[in-house]
Length: 405
Image (cartoon, rainbow, N blue to C red; front, side, top):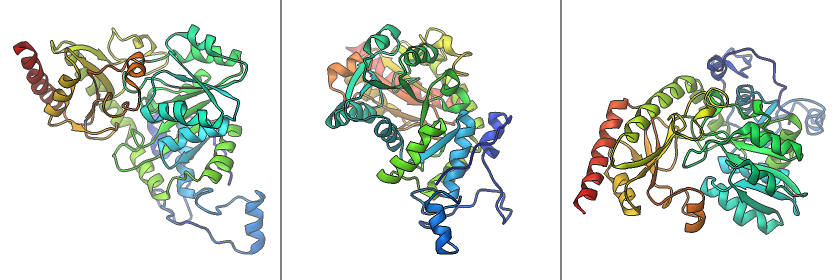
């Protein structure tokens, strides 16, 4: 089922997260109705046939589309500035849809040498089983990207900023290389959201989101979104999602729509608190380095103001210690919850080497810049003074241990 075409809008993003894509139904309901149904009844057989043939608009079956989910798709498309968007049952469902929808046996994929662990496993372990060649490169080195392109290269996949160490890539430079060779670019924009970064405006072809994170913002949904040109999203919706079935439930779409209404306010708080925390950590003797684009010494800081509006709510720190010290630090935190997600009201902490990126072999992990003493923090919505106090007691505990040895 085709999604409605996107109307032009001049709404500011802060307004679009509330009103974007909303169509008031006949009941006059202010909020989006939740149509929790698997299938839709037809008035007669000819109506059903016309909808299946694409001759008449209207819902058929929720795996093919649902009005509640359609509104979410319209809203994220408006926010990202894309022609269309397609919702999936998870962030990995969205990533898989793009890779399976755009690549065939014999094609070549270029991926960043540091990706979310499951994305890395999908690219390096699963896709080669289907005859797809994969090359890992450092996207911070444009010459490496250009050198990796082959005659059969079809796609580039990257995150910016990168999970977990927050390296930020120059999208303009990467897109210029890709477009010169007619290679599609796919960027995961989960860490930034469309309020802080719009990759499509830099020429990127497809944008991915784990809507589980900031877009929903409340830690109670698993979802993915894909944004891009209509012809690409047609493949995502009417081939990949229809046939592979990674559909988002209407209830989860409704929860994300509700969560997105506070996205602008939440992102302001996430970013402001994260910058305060990053500056505190940068000055602490127990911390070797802080990876956060909002800091002036970060390699991607120059992109703020041109590509990114702020540094986001996620950062990583490397302790003056080893693997065991990192585990001790994480376990010493009390207000930060040990959990592998981000974008929730609660501040979260995780140890990538033993958690989200444990599927990397040690050499590959080190090459990707993920050290054993790296810890990722997702700054929530708590009062920043309470977060600093929790970090202080945990770091002092670890630092005291180091000075005694």
